[in-house]
Image (tube, rainbow, N blue to C red; front, side, top):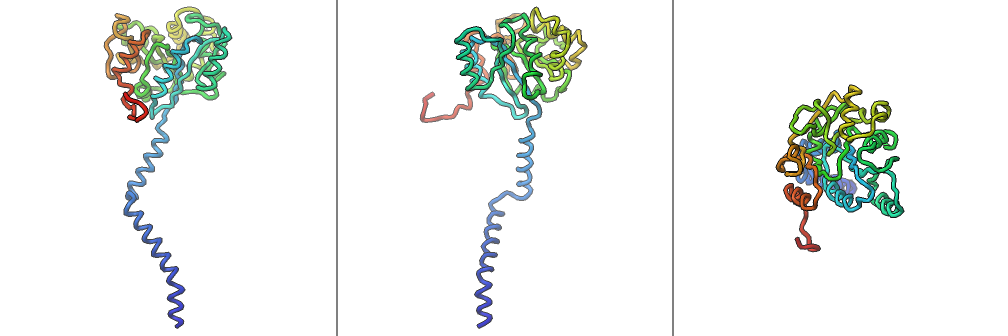
Length: 294
């Protein structure tokens, strides 16, 4: 009788142990091997670390260009790179009209992607200097790279990030070197379509008297001049032919669209944008839905 009681007492505990064993064994059968599990963990960790650098793209535009900004938000809102954290901001000078203050305020409240500089709107009278020199003071954090881009350029962020990945993070000047036929990045300066400076050069512009005393003239040419005078940007890279003007818009700097494109400049007309976006099939990831017929 005593043995039976012991068996009855032990049975529930034994059943619990057996149940746990069965569940554990079942999980082991359905789950990846321990090696595979470690690989998944490693991949997840690697994915977390894949953002290897940061890039701020400042698109210089004008307050009244609402339609262009909304369009570019679509263009860059569907792009990202796993190896870089890329922020896109729209940059212009002080607002001058009551309607601008209302409309731009709505944009800021909704998108948080606008920088308003303390300057009078201009193209070649110090706006680019105001942009670079203000960033160390107004940004909450620094970036590895800062880009100045026009609002008539199409940037492909993945190829752009891949081209920057192996490059130095300091004393670096990157873009499309002028004159157009040249492949030597030290020969002159980088085109204003879109050029990149490492953060230390942005900091230098903010404190140096060289750019501060020379702010009037073609903005892209001036930046090259500043760097030359300051003996800066010993690391220079011109990314041709991946950066270029739209076919037929500039006989010296333009060529046909190519698959390895990073930037296409001089997109002034909607049909030019349509041609470029169609060539690179930017809507290929559009998912089918009963909500729309395309």
